[in-house]
Image 1 (tube, rainbow, N blue to C red):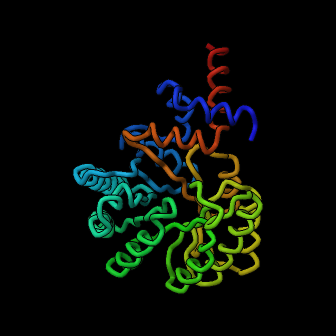
Image 2: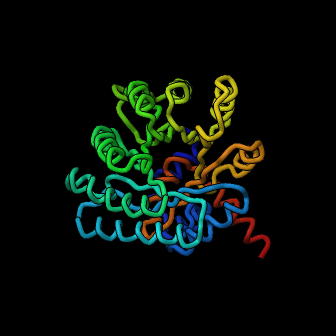
Length: 303
């Protein structure tokens, strides 16, 4: 870890909120649904589709879950009304998983039911390892009720992932595969970058050969290369996969992928909970702060 990275992580708790917002504004569409819609429209002009995400997680009060469900209903209506090339994603803890698993399932079901009526797909995100079993159980209960209406996320760094991929592929699931961002014990997760990369490729092969629809969620150019190699080797049709990237991260790579004719979906987060999301992103990837400082200095020099 560089000195700069260590400095960023150490000073985040005392960094003024406006400064965090400046650093992270490339990575968050804004605080409002209108800003989210405008971002999706801009991405569509570039040839990308999107996943809209109302920021929020670790909810502990039922009334806050009800608010999140209502916000997602508004997003679904906005996607349909504006004919946006977008689906949505949500977090189980945002939907009440830390309160009660059945309550969480029913809250997600309320979102999927409204989305399904308008032909909009809902992705159930994966959080840290204590939530993995419950998330997969909820996903399976809901996919049985809403066939093709929902999908799930799998993190390559967990030791259990290959077995999960075998099962999900056999079920014909829609799976977003990512490296995983949560700090987990070595007993259950890989820690070294190269090992996580290899685990990602192994999991991707299982999903692709097993019949899953795969969202290849990575900004790692090596993994993009490996994925393209697998697509070519397997003769995979373009309706069996898509690439996925975060808003604001490596737009040049994004354009390289879309320029080659591959479908690419951009994760578009927005909402009033932008601050904790932005802090977490800066902690995970201090280069966000570095890019923000460079942009700030450039702006000052030009003004």
